[in-house]
Image (cartoon, rainbow, N blue to C red):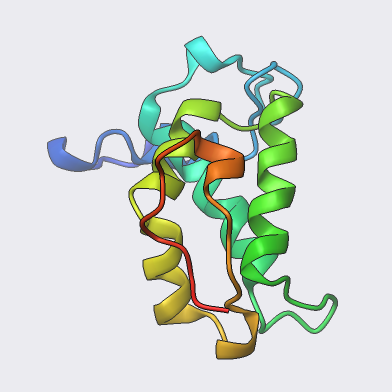
Length: 131
């Protein structure tokens, strides 16, 4: 449906990005069962953002919001299962995007310490949330 809308040039990728947020890197996602190499980096980023938001959202009556460390741990497991892009997940963490989002949208009691070294390799010390 989105692909039929006349998006302006700067928004032409919206249908692909929005339509691919449930795809998995191993081709088992939906709706099109795309593999990593068939998805743009923006679509792979959207999948990461969508999962992170779903895990941390405190406004869902059907589930309890996860803490920052629980969410990152779940997502790290998803990289080992080839559900989300490992490189982009590491960028998400090492850039501090996850923490900026947390500070803006998460409840203070959800924001706990994340040991980035577990997920992005040695030397990644910036971006850890206070205990």
